[in-house]
Image 1: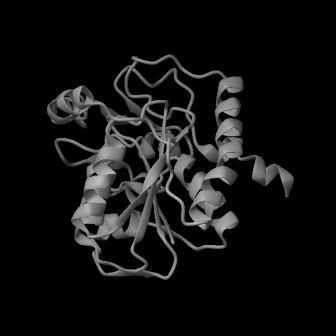
Image 2: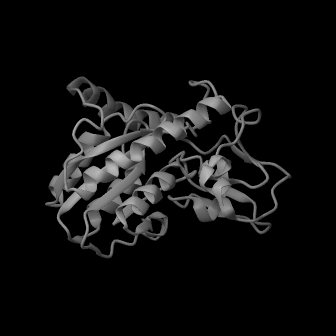
Image 3: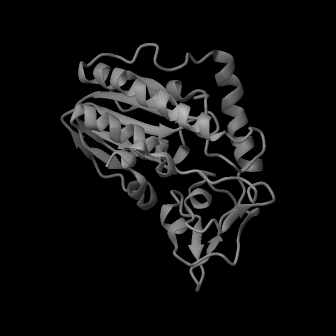
Length: 262
């Protein structure tokens, strides 16, 4: 069973392609995350957890779901990470999660996909050619990963090695970054908003509450900064301070070559 969370479509793409090749089913974890649904998940086939990388780690709301949800049936579990280029300590976290749940950790794989985090200026925007190149490279890696999973083999050397110094830096750094950089005060919505409430329905941590007109109101101190609200707004009415107004929005659907083949 392929379980995934995806804010802008990168991870969903990888999950669906793996499912197609493995003749397996996919489960979008968004509803479970939003509703804190920790009911058991059962699968006769290995579990494959597909998630994006947030601040060098597995998103905390995904970790919580995995920790609290009983996994029944098959005892093997694989992890697949999508990132803008660096998966941080995700493989170490995945191994620990599997061990705590008494599951057999079968390794993890990294996919370098187009970067969708636009709430800072640390990284330059990707060109159209680079976006398409990353998608193409990732697509070509999928058959290898799916073959290994189908044959019950471990994903050896398909994710980066995590050095001790990375753990020592990341573990204390992430909470500080989250507290300082992932606030909601800079989010704003313009008059272009059509009140569709899409942003609220896609927020994994439910920090958006629509007002009477359907416009988003961020009613918490911090959020996951998954960029789902900004990137999926159909009229590009949401911004983050003075950082995002001039930046292009990204969702995988705009580059999904599978649609072009139909």
